[in-house]
Amino acid sequence: MLVKVSEAAARGGQVTIQGRYLGGPTIGKVRLGASETGEGGFVFPAAAIVSWTDTQIVLTIPSDAPVGGSWLFVEVGSKRSTGLPYSVRQ
Image 1: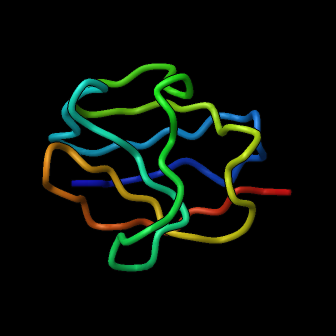
Image 2: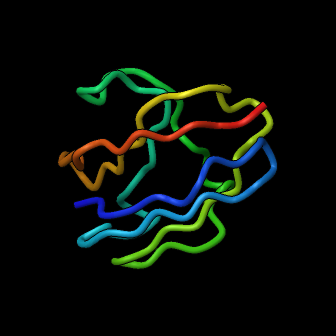
């Protein structure tokens, strides 16, 4: 379950996601730019992960991440979180 996401950042900046039951980097992934239902979008590569605990994920926004407003989801196993709006700045 996602609770909060940090303010918009540019490529190369960091995004912090706070929530509960976020799993870990071996079983989870973060999806950006997905539709409101979580389909499609950009999946952050493992190299983008700075830290990942059950309550907080810190990622570096890759240079190929889509710019603009979109949705952010965390997927753990086969379960997908609710989405939070997020924007990658130019």
